[in-house]
Length: 253
Ligand SMILES: N[C@@H](CCC(=O)N[C@@H](CS)C(=O)NCC(=O)O)C(=O)O
Image 1 (cartoon, helix red, strand yellow):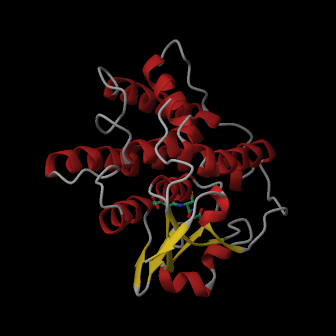
Image 2 (tube, rainbow, N blue to C red):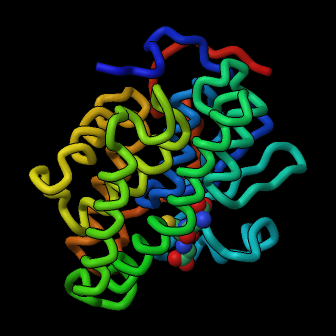
């Protein structure tokens, strides 16, 4: 069982960093997983998208696109999960474990992240948003088709390899795991047709950061999809990512 962050690993507290996020969003969960994988603790602020809080003037100043996640490190603001994760890895994770330092390894990791950004994520939005925001009751056939095609792509990308981005789990795996686990709520992954993909997702689901940072939000997304309507029970409260993991001493930088 591959576990990327040890329970007793020292957590680096980055008090000057804040993440605005909502747990049901795969892009936000990709950042939350990366933080937990790299043992970084920052302030997290829950934003209720159903109440339109991501469009508030306070956040619109940071992100004219009005999307989450939004990440701030002192004066620097980054509004895309892929860019946030590569920043966090290159700025705060010396080991190169999640974003290889050699140009070739880094390019292969980023290649998969671009696939997520350009192909997987738009398919997630196209399939999920009509259900969450337009009272559509099911995933439209065209969207099912597109998601199945993506599963086929990924099945091909996993030929002869255990992880999508390299020889060990990297940001590529974290990013795709956030999106694919969410897609699998909309279109279940058929283990017989996609044995490599389902095996990979199972391996990812055993990583500690997946358990601490993806599981809960994925459940919220699944409930939201079942409900199909505005959910009043969401809440907004600032907290630190160390509380999610609930373990390990903290050092500050
Ligand atoms: N490419 C962006 C996508 C961000 C994105 O689309 N986030 C969604 C949440 S999953 C959002 O904020 N949607 C705003 C809306 O629905 O109004 C990233 O990876 O961060």
